[in-house]
Image (cartoon, rainbow, N blue to C red):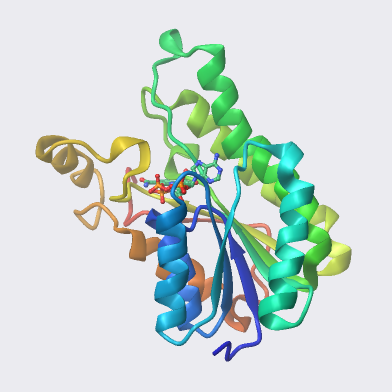
Length: 252
Ligand SMILES: NC(=O)c1ccc[n+]([C@@H]2O[C@H](COP(=O)([O-])OP(=O)(O)OC[C@H]3O[C@@H](n4cnc5c(N)ncnc54)[C@H](OP(=O)(O)O)[C@@H]3O)[C@@H](O)[C@H]2O)c1
């Protein structure tokens, strides 16, 4: 069942926020191509869960740091679209895959810096560049940013600055793709309880984070997944080039 006749590609759909985006988009009748990197079984399990629930989903491998693989990946996307939906276009792209590498500035090596750049920034740029020819005119691209683009937290300098860069990049894409009426927005989650960066630590640390949130709790993957899925509809058709923070009111 693909009741909306819309198709989403979401990166990093094997777990966490990306998994929730995939499942909640499918619940809204959107066909889903999700990607996994290291966790093939989990990626395929998410697709199976959607298919068993009456939706339609396919899982493909993608390493967003491997720019040289993107042309091959695009070919696989075209094949998956043809085989499963009999078409060759996407409506929505959500660049969600990302990594955390917490280290103080004094401890940040070039290797840590480069890995963060490659996955969280360079990969998003070139994957979008590669896939945009497949995105229908009038489509919607959402980049997953972070509250750390707005607030500064020791150990997150490179990560936070790259997310801020991603938000800027989002506006540039909106500008340059305006002729195709493709909209670009960034969604910035607050502290979300996933495995990201090894998770949110022990009870005391989690309570400390929660105390900085107006709603008094960490978010869960569905707090973000449901919201992002809700943006994949005509209801948000005039939303463009915006940053939307979904963090329960963190550090306000
Ligand atoms: N959790 C938070 O507190 C939080 C807060 C703000 C923003 N965010 C952002 O939200 C997004 C998702 O985070 P999450 O919490 O869901 O993280 P997560 O639970 O750690 O999941 C990360 C996902 O990204 C994929 N991934 C990691 N490296 C990849 C690579 N090189 N190529 C392709 N896929 C890769 C993983 O795939 P495999 O498992 O298959 O390897 C997995 O599906 C990230 O962009 C993150 O920066 C998270």
